Length: 399
Image (cartoon, rainbow, N blue to C red; front, side, top):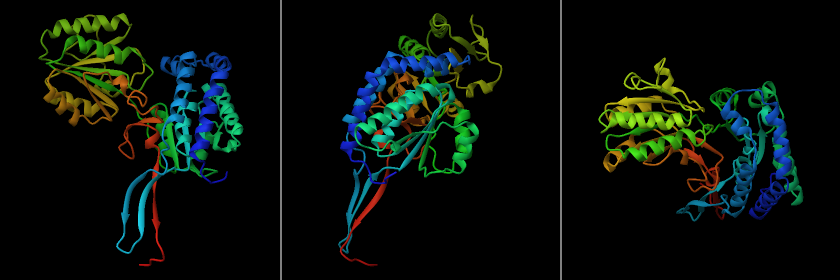
């Protein structure tokens, strides 16, 4: 592939063409996706939800592409400038990584949204989707190739790797082409597989296992609404709630717990509890403390009790996935302490963890939600999928 960087006009033109093509072929994409849904033999509700393509997901794909085309060019942005004593003019500017490999499970929309962000950031895209979404992914990649061709750009900018697990491992260990960055999108097994075998940098889009702490000064109505939204709005999302910690000094605690249980049961959520909670009806005792580490991606939740915010913070930092955590309280000082002390990419005060999402946080979409601290934490948007380069202009200076 020609290494000459595509101009922002060319990149935007491809994205606009892609948005039009997805709109024109929406029924075809949904029809093709039905093949993947019929072939799926698992009983994982979250996987099935991620695999399914419907009109709402199509609308999301189109909106993502349109918003990307409207955003400023993330490349060539000057971050630092300096004039040397010897007259050299020095600047540091954003630059593309080069080639980005996205490995993902079950989500055909990643083939558009994540690839679109990487493409707008000036990168060649390698896509390795799961076998469960093969028909959907190939149909979308065919549209990418059409969008590129319509703008007289080689289709090599977007390439699909139709590899099995063994061939994928070999490619990770000994790539047959240059790969500068890998982004795995999926469960812990996929992420561990990529981290074990990759020979280039990996951005980890980590597990959720998100907590809500109901402080003693909480508004009980806000707390219940927050937990129900976080748990039931979308169980397949990494920003869903799995754990609830209730301050033992919460006024009318027993009434609050009963109302919370009733609200969860309306949504058929399986409720597990520690010893302080198991006296309530419809609560199953937890088998082991290891359950506090688990991300469920299901209608399942654990409720426990804490002495105070100090114990809540400690428990969250011990068990959470480093993704999102929320505190429900009317006490601003306590909220500030909680938010500065909890070791998560996103921390909330009286708001749902479901907002940990690139679009919801104003990024216009996301490549992934990183639980690593380098190079970017939390949702990785267009402006984050860049590296940097030094530009030095002189007129014969030597050192």
